[in-house]
Length: 288
Image (cartoon, rainbow, N blue to C red; front, side):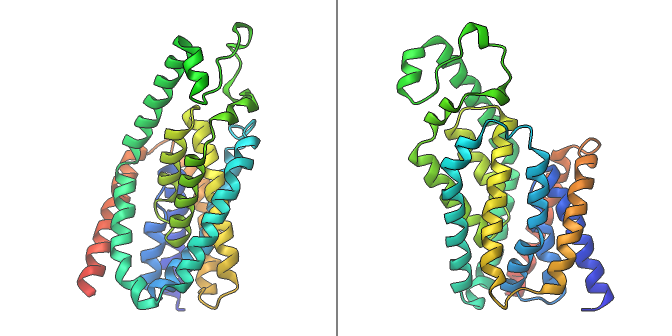
């Protein structure tokens, strides 16, 4: 590893951590940076997963206030996320290097598509929640039959969302668990787009405020990546020097990203990441 390669990966990790904090899709930056240094595609994917895990941890810590009162959801959905992460990591390790290299451009394009529709997905989640809340208020019995928790009594109507009762766990169904499992398997196999998939599953199948849903998504994403990293650690397919650089720079990028988020609109950054991802996919397709 020369100084130029180290600088390239360090810059990619810093930017990836910031992008994950602001809009998501950091893998679409770290992964191409590793490929540019000559690291094989499979090793680059595994190294990226290992190196960016600190960014997810920082994000979960930053959402600690929104995670209050959601322990029951973590208990219900955590096993599905962890199992999905384990399955995805094992499938990745069993995938031949040539087969993964062939699939990479299409995985990148799929991640770009997920990132491109992220804002529309968030809007859909918000509308879904508003409609569910309105329906619950207008028809309490029907809402109860659907598994949605009953509205709070008048005296508690002003209670903050963070203090939502554990009874809301009644809305966690097997389709939700299966969706989290599938998202976890995908995210452990190829990290880009994991957060968007989880946000879609949780936002559509659970009823809660978007920020609390996003907090739950972030912690589950950390769990998925942590399990994958544990599996990858026992293999010889991690470029440890690059992984070490990413661990430090992505964590720093996550901290800086929180500050940049106040200045740079997320849609602008998201568009830039999507354009970069499409360019990378096209280049990989041309190279074959």
